[in-house]
Image (tube, rainbow, N blue to C red; front, side):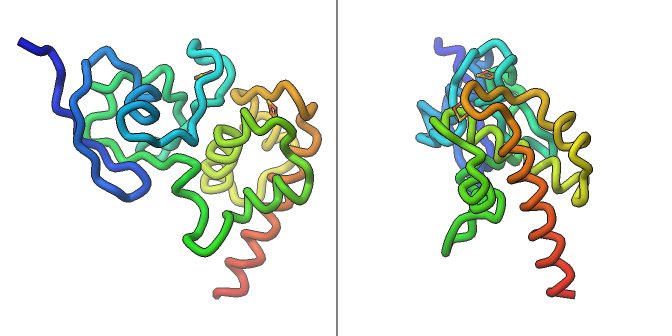
Length: 164
Ligand code: FES
Ligand code: FES
């Protein structure tokens, strides 16, 4: 008898059902079973943050979450952040401020930054650095990532004010 569980989860607003072994990691379910490849696999040991997704309103490293823990969860990945007609402001600011080079860390960085700005819409530079400290980048030296996030915060706040 298979010990696979019937896993139901919502990713980027879309309901998914699949079979997974309870010990299987969420990152593998997302990438290999659901074809959602925005979250990357870097270290698989909870160090690099390349696999960061948003689960139940919190940033999590999907290489440290078992499929069983994701039962019924609402998950957002980088694919779910952009508007249908274009990029999310964070993505635009990463591009404008050169917050990426090879791009490997970028989906995790942007997904984490998105949660950071949901929780703290006007962070200081220090708060951005602290909030992003679980995400590693081997290319950029972080300066431009921090600039991009601060610029995105300004733009998102301006958009919110304009809409009020
Ligand atoms: S792949 Fe998950 S933290 Fe590195
Ligand atoms: S842009 Fe290459 S690891 Fe961050």
